[in-house]
Image 1 (cartoon, rainbow, N blue to C red):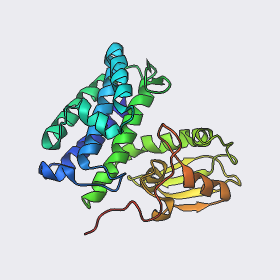
Image 2 (cartoon, rainbow, N blue to C red; image 1 turned 30 degrees about the vertical axis):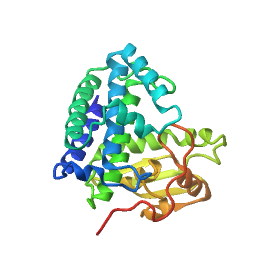
Image 3 (tube, helix red, strand yellow; image 1 turned 90 degrees about the vertical axis):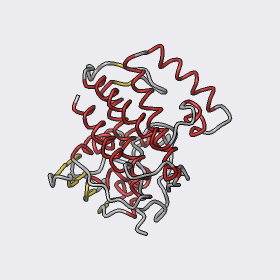
Length: 265
């Protein structure tokens, strides 16, 4: 699956960004929920391990879920993830994370995209699983790029995240126990390569135009739509961009305007 290579390439880009950091700098606090870089890398590493277990060792994945359920009872997810990894941090964490990401990518490359895999929620296909890991790596990586003041140069692999955003249009509303306010708005997004990616049909729902990167930032809730250059016209389009959520879990609201941004100091 190309998505498995895309997942690894996104991980490798973040790995390269972290190369200059000392162990102590991994404790830098980001604008994502006050998590440190260590917190974010542990989160990515633990759930990459989980995804790898789901495709290679179903019994091991079931055991992981039991550890996770016990670990977060009355606690915080970052605490469980730190305990699960025996407090692994800094440059050693960086090495362990990228090594497992490479192994996981190879396992998914060899898999049938339609293979059904166990997960925390409903089962999903191998294709959906590795696409979700790519999305998570890109989205959580944004907080690290931001705090380090780095401008990420995206590749067209973010097309996977765009498609995930499109495919979760209906789920965004269902997750909030709401009916979709109309048909999905039309999208005209410019890919990093300059290609035009179009989705949806012309309708009264409106139109969303701009960079694919900005669209990904909104549907992953890395940015408030007001902090992007997206052009959003039509009531339905505006409603969607105010609550879009392409990741699993209970409904979450995007950050308020000017809460998430790239550090320029």
